[in-house]
Image (cartoon, rainbow, N blue to C red; front, side, top):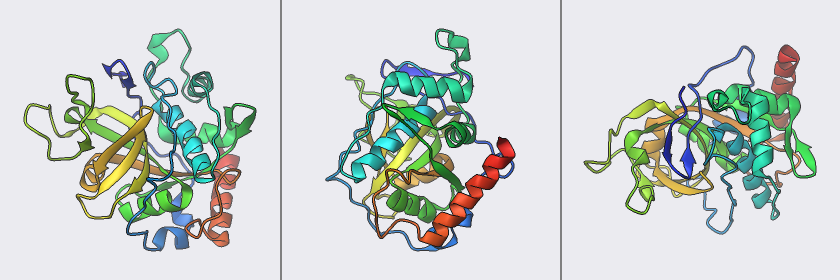
Length: 272
């Protein structure tokens, strides 16, 4: 994938979704994924404090997504984790083969491979290295995606943006709400495989097609409808930072945690 630049402060960088033999699946967390997700997830009182983490210069959205997932999880616990652009770029290099200073190697990342690197090697932030558990969900199961958002802080998503999603006004701002019903003249409204991007699902106003989902991307929040998410999503994953995640009634049960740990351990033995 050629990394495309649409504005000075936005780049892409999520390569087409792939699967790996034995990769952790959230189907192991039967109780967690099968339950009915909350009808509404209101986090307007919590600042997840997303950062660009180099995604204005490089196609490192897969690394920035992990860094901002750490920050979002921290915010739920009432604190924050310091992450620098240099740390995010260093992980991007380790997980994708990017060589700093060599633009030809800035080709983005495959989400499952990036998550595998984080599981195996950790994600180094200021003064510590954090190791996530992770698992993949069916991207068509929006109830499952909402359970991930509610119980594990945010959903780590791979999407294919339409050219219309990247339309900017005269001030360089994106549309206030991404939707499938885009105004004429804003570009092709169909998902574009060349526009792969990693972003996070943070909260939502409801579960109907036109209800609003808050996404974390490019160092800020972006609103979108659920029908937009359904149209653009190509993969969905959960990251679980047991070092950071606060206790919550929406978190996985102990049997589900055990199942996720076992799935990650089995996968790690296979890729070590």
